[in-house]
Image (cartoon, rainbow, N blue to C red; front, side, top):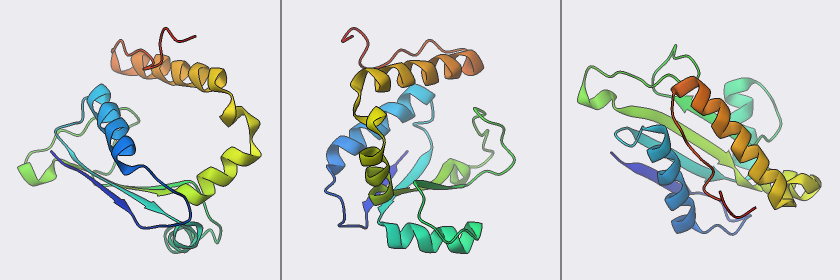
Length: 141
């Protein structure tokens, strides 16, 4: 199914083709490529407005997600009954906020730390999903 990627901000230069490619890779690795997914990149003003409306938090944040299917456990893939239900929902990325976090936290610039975090996340995912996923950067370190 489709991946709808929108960039509604101008605060941070974004390479949409690369982001789309990486999102598709993650969808494939998780086995959810049959589902629609919306990913929207927004600035601090918009993510703060949404955070205020939906979470009653008047501050910018990094990610807000709006799942299509409710009451799913972490790692559980929906089992739709109808074609229109093959939808994961929408994810809003506060890219301006994310960039500010990266600049404040030196660990984000440490590639080895990122590799270790990626490996840790995949190990946990493998444990819960029974998969054998490996970091895309395996063999580089």
